[in-house]
Image (cartoon, rainbow, N blue to C red):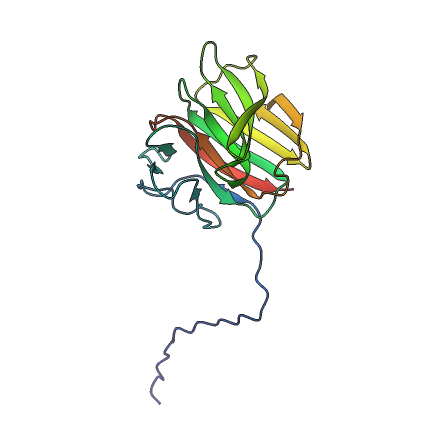
Length: 207
């Protein structure tokens, strides 16, 4: 008796009545091939979203670090929807920038409303928290106790109204604020017109 051949047919099953599973948080190590855009996160394949439809240069360099900047200068953000407003945002500031600000954006709802935790490399250098409401930026907290350096690991812990910021595991800034407390997108922030700044190992773990 001869062998019966086995054929495998590609079948795609799609039932729109079934509930979808929400994936909370994200992680991106930018370990994929260098590219002219940030594309999708390495773990969940969630898209990076730019604060501008055009006029932002972004990508991944040969070392596996992310970069982006607004071509004309000024504030720009690239974010991922974590589906959670509370949790821990981590990012390695592989290469800092000067004299502009570079760091992380969090509780972002659009290009006019969000928070940032970033460097300000003027003078001795500093870290600060900015709040942006209706495109108006207010400095909420700042410190010169920690001078920004290449390789700094930035961490922001979001717990309701409480925002706590760390550099290399050491708490340096904290504030309480209700602005955008339900916003679920978090990511990166830059004010320079150049792509000098570099980021690596960006993640958000939902609480």
